[in-house]
Length: 312
Image 1: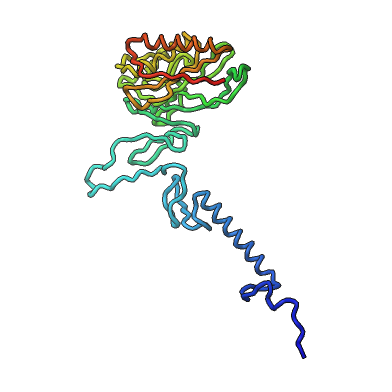
Image 2 (image 1 turned 135 degrees about the vertical axis):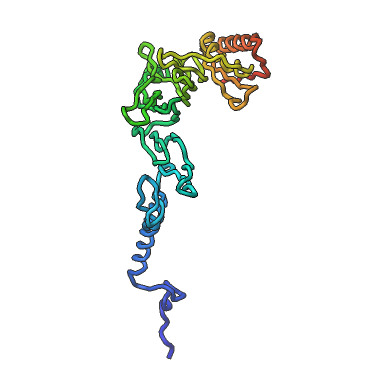
């Protein structure tokens, strides 16, 4: 007698006999595995070790606890100062230093760190000569008004402000000068960077395009704390820098857009770019010729090459 033929052999869905047929265990294990992967991924994205391993309980934004260092968005507020070899030796850390951490100004001494500001937008701190103040730049949100595509419109601005704060925290931060600029209905702002106080404490040198950002380039200027006015120092300038400094004159004279588009990191050479918009090609070509003749006529500028690109 011939035995009946099976329609499908045993374990047809698992020919090697490795799986569990007809059980809910496999889907459950798959879900658990996905959850573990998700938890580990979230921990790593937050800068933590998976499942809380190595989590510190320190204070001051980064001291170690029983599990390791705590996460901090910037260097911690702890400065390691070597201990004197003997109790009678002088401390190895004398004086104080100032720095910006997470948008706030701090002062560090051998006694520990002191937070001077809490705005979250401060940077570029610099000491006053007497050590009583820290000068810095702080950005504040404001609304600007400027034509965009031929139509006036508003936009968000991050306006730099020159600030100072007493080191002993005897008073709040002082707003010395704002980069916000207004002319008629138009509102925009100028740049202010890297303030450094003079030995007399009366003048601050910084990189800025004050007082008219529409007519000046970003250069080193002196700000008089008493008069509140800017002045340009008489610094030696190479021919390349003189060419870059003539951009404001070119803008005003020919009513074109002008910028230094290359060679900013070189002292002897600069690449200047000019943009002309006109209703007819011949008008744009005539303006370009005038700019070209003007630059070639300047004795302090040596023009090495010029090219023209047309967009229609």
